[in-house]
Image (cartoon, rainbow, N blue to C red; front, side, top):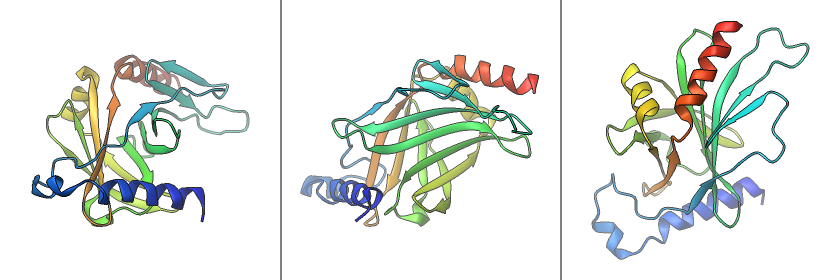
Length: 189
């Protein structure tokens, strides 16, 4: 069994073993949250810059025709250092600001992923691909961008194949400074 498949099974078992009391909770409540932490890159790429919990990563290596940058945050399970979520904010080919969230395989595809900054409005991201993991994408509306710039944390939720939610909290600490740097890099290329 691959590491990705084993991790997906671990997350599914967390959702399945959430206890009898969790069955009476509304769907939107989290039944069991894996303890996560953000990780710092041990050896960041040559063109990476840290902004507290976010890293600005750019592909401006020699031979790359067009430079692109994105803000990235990885949430890993505490103790095992296994990836639970990867959040990525950057500009798409049409100039739209995008939020891409990656999760392990073994999720309920129709439910997508929910992202809620500071526990306010939840935004639903539809899954786009599922290869080594699944990725969901959202064109960021202005109100979400402002909430992320001013917020302190965001709740990321996906649903296991049994429709039980699995959530983690991402920090927005450093996002505003990182976004300003993203904008500056975008304006110079």
